[in-house]
Image: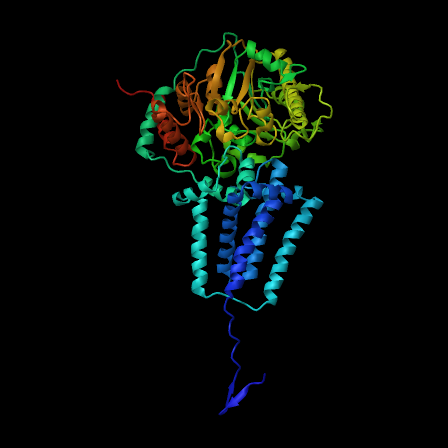
Length: 638
């Protein structure tokens, strides 16, 4: 159209009026887009349309709650960009990438995508080269293809944009709604409870499977924040330091034959547990002859683990640092979220005593962010998968025997006494992969062939772990160097969905963990530990001991002086040897769902110590240093 001239002036045509939003189209989008987003996310995350349909049919209210979250994301983006199809395309990209990352992370390391994974840098990038399969490319192509198609449709259609006030309202309201879900606002409790949400914090894979990806991911946001204890202050920590200073005294008497510092070897064997504890199952032979012999001859007992089926690094965190997961947000992973400065540990303690401190893990360095965490904990050296020369594999992972041989090599090459913290991988789940072919140890008593196959695969791995321990014992029995070996599992294995093997074997009464008794909960978190030494320490049986107290216990047993905070651990373990978030065991073996009044003050001191060391101003370390310096200074006077 040519411009017209009016009294000597050129009049340009007016721009076309912006089309107002069609309420019918918006209403249809509100109904259709969230449903498609939830279905798409769950198909990508679960791996199949069938599993997604089964979940939605059995959990319709939870599916609707996931749909509400998807709608909040969609409308939030709509408010930001002001274009309906562009907001739909961005929602597909964002939520599908969350689903894909969760799917491949679960495939690779058995854990879904957590909110705190966003803050990982190099560690998360290390996963990318592993995701190169045809399946990954097809899924990525589907996601990007869908998003591009939505962008193209939006480009071709007339622009329909809401007013600025409407857009700002959408951003504010939807942002507030997402924030409320992420922080688990009190007014939301009735809604999520009515939907049947059960936050399974000790098993995040089941948590995501039961509650849906969007809901489980969003509810985990609150687990990134550690609240400050109400009694925490500099004056309170100064007084606590004074009290702790009184606990530090001379070490216990050492074994009579001990004339030099012993090598100390901690071995956390992946998912190691005693399958003969299953009530209704018989085995063709004893799968754990070494461990069962040591239980009769040496110090042994059961560790109370904060994890089940996964989360190895959380158990490792408790043992190495002496800290407790009970004070961390449910579902959190300290190795990935919180450890970004030096943290006192067994490694730094032994290093201060003249030891060489070495970590060994037969998997990738980035796994659970260990390459950074071990540095903060004071290890001299970290030997990961890359440090093994042509190792023998059992299944997909380096064999436990190879780890034992590497431990022996490290001890033999060091002139100074050696502290080793070793973590194995051979018996990592899942156990339905027939990794060993025909398993020589047969079982009887389970109802289904799948459960029998899963258990027999696990049992073969546990038997190999037992043999790897014997390999170490055989070597150090012939050694002139005093040596202590502490061998244990990190958590019970996940033997099928819904605790299938445990339920079939009568180890628990039901596959629904929320219905377990406290005794069943304790059983499902109790892993055996054994100590072996060529130093002749007297035998002792430990019915229950939290993994956070194991370090203090071992130092006491071998006659080494405890640092002040670990001395407090030893004192607290006498009153409440078992301390989990939802299970407490007192000195008489009585079980509680929460900390009983008799030890609440003691446990609160433990919490304050942990907060000060990890998140606070480290007042205790400062004042203890001053007190020790004053104690060591020569007195003046005439």
